[in-house]
Image 1 (cartoon, rainbow, N blue to C red):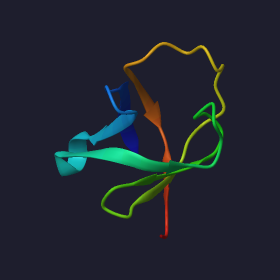
Image 2: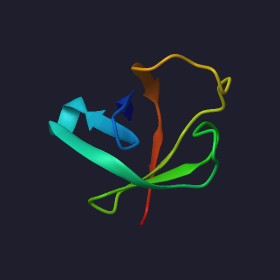
Image 3: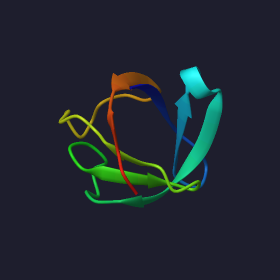
Image 4: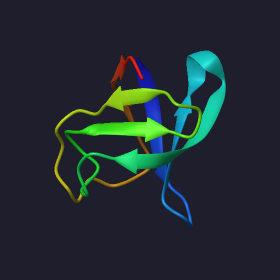
Length: 68
């Protein structure tokens, strides 16, 4: 699923265009964000691709949605 990640004042947010949904990331598996699972405020879980820790945001990526 195509998602857009961006940095906010409090952390990170994800925008899912197909669902017209924007939610904050409330939990990250990896402190660098990339290559691990992230949990959104609404309970959705995404597996993010491996990318360099210094990847500039905002960025659109292909992420896999997992069961919560």
